[in-house]
Picture 1 (cartoon, chains in turn cyan, orange):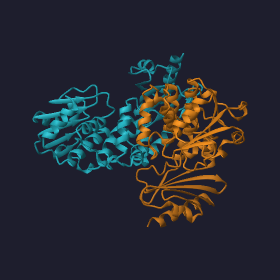
Picture 2 (picture 1 turned 90 degrees about the vertical axis):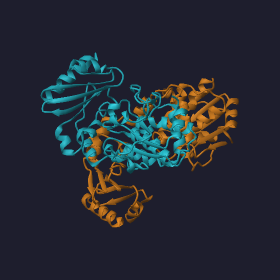
Picture 3 (picture 1 turned 90 degrees about the horizontal axis):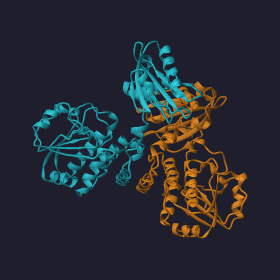
Picture 4 (picture 1 turned 30 degrees about the vertical axis):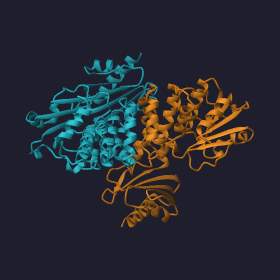
Length: 319
Length: 319
């Protein structure tokens, strides 16, 4: 089905639920709230649901406080719009509710989408569902308000890493240009999403960066994180995930290694490379896997011994 | 003069010099090399000059190695194109050369441009000179090659902080979309310019972030850097400048303070705020100045005493 037809269906119905996936990211929240704001503005009865806790950094989004969880789902709706959700399993308790609703419209950009629902529109060329919602609204003659634009812009920059990832297209840029013309404070949105850190994140960053070691004429960078660092800083596992690329991002490094202590004498290894070394081959030596430029494995043993085995293996693959 | 007329002038001349300012940034180098690539592609005789050392991180730019310095300036040119240079004083020894050239075209986006040269085109609405060069080439029917696009894209993301700053417009986005359609590896360009750090930068980051202090119910964040940290890490003053916003970027902080030891018992203070506190008033108390959200001053004394005076002053302004 094409977007015009979905737009026509929406114009004919009166009451809607918009649902997105658990562990929601900026695209899930931004695209859902964007559509929610737009439908409310034209007088539709609409509720919005996300089956999980919401990251508080998105609280600047218009009508963020109106997002409900699964326990607050009571009414029956004429139409459920499911956004950014490649698989019904990511909807938690809503899976059953979908079965008892006459019209379920599945709008997504994941190529792996399982095409559930009565109608589905999956565009894997779209950087984000925010981009699809923009097109849906435009093609059906809706004005895009500043509030809706704030949500859709958030969705787009979240899924493109601020226009840095390869999913960014000239369409993405054209849409972003139209959205900022509504007068949204996009420098502030970028500051909140990309520059803001918690005290605990800064503490963890300080501890982890202090471990930097360079090997092989500064072409191999290695950084590690102990459980003690995580405890001392009070940071979360999620905060730790941002450390993975620190070593790779050293300018002279061809290979970047991040070693994370996950249990007593158990270490999770993340390997990254830039141009030459196939890190998947290294990961496979330790029963791990991945891709040529990003791979991972788990190694057990004393830290010093694990590190030595790993470095020896990397250097042997380098030749 | 409008861009079409400048284009016509360029089409009539044969040999050109392109010059930009000392201490060159991404816009200076990117816009100059973009125009240089484009003029070479249509068979013009053209040389490119920058009167300073070039930051090596831009070495991925096509024809970067052909950039000459002032000592290599020998020929006479029919036309000198000066890019991204608001003031002739930023051209070093080239100031005299301009006086002895018949046709000097000054292309810039700084509102403060002194309008030197025989012809000047200053568009302060343009995010970057790269954006102006794009328009110059387009309006005059030039194809924009992948090489030229790589340079102009670099120029734009450098001066907009990756489309984050308020100088980004829908025009900027439209141009960026056209440039990435040439097939440039823009994720890699972004990685090089925004994510790459030197070993010394990481060492400095570790030392400086370890000093984080929170005051006033976590609403005042303070970070400091001693000369000893700079020496230990081997980082440059330029690396240190990136630390200024670290404290402000703490999520709970309304005010962020960065204290930098610049001499024995002499400290340079940078103050940042988000929504409430007028940091200029604080800076002025110590004979400094600035703006409501970003100000600075210099305070002499023992570190502990300087820090106490500063915090006391901030808290007294908070009410």
